Length: 161
Image (cartoon, rainbow, N blue to C red; front, top):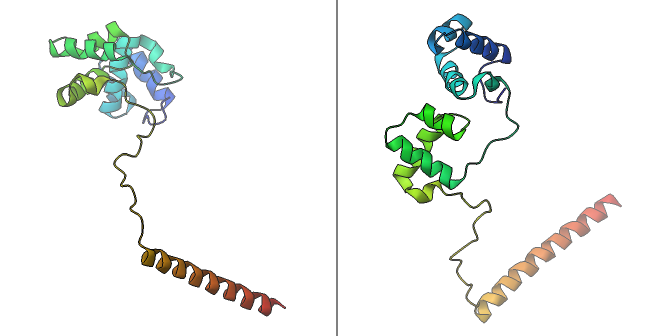
């Protein structure tokens, strides 16, 4: 079972059994006593993968750019999400709609894999050299703080003795 799933394994198995008997997701959800949305998500995946939908896949799939682009172009041409997902072996048909939305907003580049590492810090301003007076002022501040720390440490050690 997926960690974020609202359905227990027993509910999922009961729903799949009803799907295989010919029930739709609404009537199956009503009989099992679960919400329609998770039942519909399970139904969509069941139409693609069959009863294998009860077995959790060990990891999430990463689809190549070409598969995503092909799916989006077929979807925009009018083909259904379910048939595209079934043909391409996608885990769920909602991926096609998600990719189509990304394609419409960002173009083909949005479907390309993103770099995994954190981007390098760019545009950092080179620090300008400090004037002599500024260097001396910072050194005085540091030495004053160090002196205050050492006095506090000395007082603490005297109290312990």
